[in-house]
Image (cartoon, rainbow over the protein chains, first blue to last red):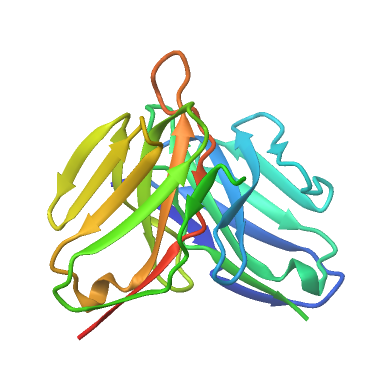
Length: 116
Length: 116
């Protein structure tokens, strides 16, 4: 079945630094990638949607200059949290959808970001 | 009013019980309905998806959609301790081509514990 690999699974960084999270579709071409943020015991909050080769579409309230999304190829999307602060600490999850209408929206395993 | 409402629980049942999880929604454009299971600190994994109204069964899991009532359910028969997780309902609208449009709207998740 469709597999999405997300790395790193856990990262701790200092306040003010930037962190990059990668999301790769291993056995299908991901025309669309979604990036979510999840707080403890809360649901997934969509941050942005990116289509390969296009600029990402950000949800209302999400700072596009802080959360940089790149989707340069059909198998790789990255989320960079720039100038991270403790309030950016969260669980970030990517999801990929293939061109064939994969209703399943395969999810990555998530990245636990802690900013100290 | 949230687009998707899901009772967060927590729900605790004995092993072997039948579990009923539910979501209501307000957006009549939703056509694709999914249930995801999420273990702690992991990404969601797809359990079931259904299109429009009706029932779908897969092993111990049965998904029901009642579009007239804007109500969806997931039933788990013969529940096992390994079913202990957070269950998220998710929905999306459809485009003219009939494939799932893209953005998923999630319920807030129900925490389920099945005790031996």
